[in-house]
Image (tube, rainbow, N blue to C red; front, side, top):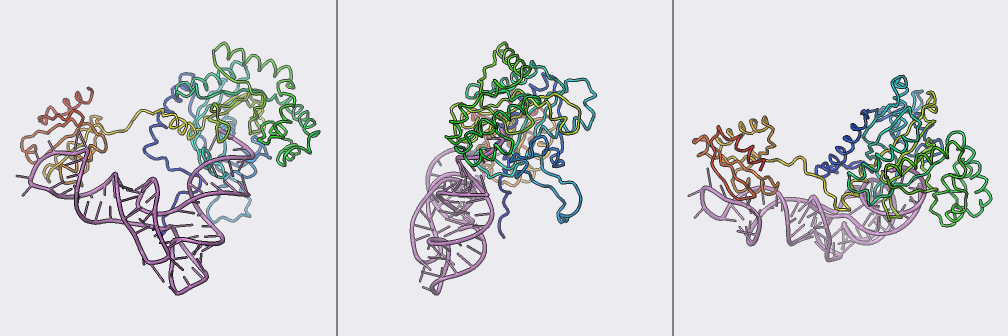
Length: 431
RNA sequence: GCGGUCGUAGCUCAAUGGUAGAGCGCCAGUUUGUGGAACUGGUAACGAGGGUUCGAUUCCCUUCGAUCGCCCCA
């Protein structure tokens, strides 16, 4: 029989990694609750159109990275609407916002979320087919102060994760629905005059109405051309310019450090005005982006709703965990047992079993290995699992109505009567 | 979608055209009820399929998987 393996690009999230997830999640959730965000969970699969229109019909994500969901054995000819595993969070959340009628609730509507996303890609460092993001959206608010507060929150989370100094928050603006098309056209014209020198991909980008992407092409010649292109900030409309400079002023006021990156372009079509990305400092190659986000004032409209301003951001959980590990930033241990019960002989086994249920009722994290016989092997196990306190019960202790409590770290032990055991144990654990 | 590297016990690695060793781990023991050391024994692997060959884990092909880079993105 051949071993069954996990599908390509997926990970088992193993016990030893859970503490990092807990660590990150607790920090994030705390920040969210403090700012009046509420949690939302949307389906893992949605209709394909939910993503196609907002993200962009020409984007890689929509064209070749979505997993289609269908009933096993169903025919491909039927008229059912195509369902896909979500490749992005924001579009699904706005779909829900519109569908549920939250647009009628008091605004701004603030939501946070966490969960898996799916994109069909060649796996590599920092890129899997299933990955986890957490993030938030502020819907129904167009103020530049909200942009600043959003970036402040990113900054604040990075700080709590102890990686702020190793990261840089890059900020740019890409224009609103009024001026973005003009910018696109201007860039299109600009790059058209250099068309012969651009790489194959960038030539396509001009035609695909996606000239913004040429700005962050990795090809040297393209970079050179792009560096002489007009900056977006100089092409946006007056309103966008004001919005952006106000955002920056607020950020300065909040003492948030950021880097302006006039070439920053985000891959998803729905972004307007402020966009930002958290990247690892001094890393040119590999997947160095830990988080990203921006304003998306026209997304709701794309999904058939009325015009709704919104801004959001999301973090890549796996990338953050990897980065924490690389920098030896440890997460607190959350699930280690405090006590191990050791039994010698059948009568003792009965007693430890009962005792175990009492300990867990009192909230003491306990561990037992009833399959083991010898004292030695059970102590060895406690040692390996780094469990500090060990309760030894043999025939003698059954008869005496007592338990030996051994402190593995101090290498000391005492016999304690059954009646006083729980309280004694609790005070020992505290010290 | 493109390119590079790599697939041997649970882990880290060897060796070999004639079916594989070690270290760590795990299990048990070293006289009867005390772990972290030592010793003894046990455990377990050539990713899959095909080809060449008398014979392949070793050579070739395919495939699957891992890994890294490009593209793209978190």
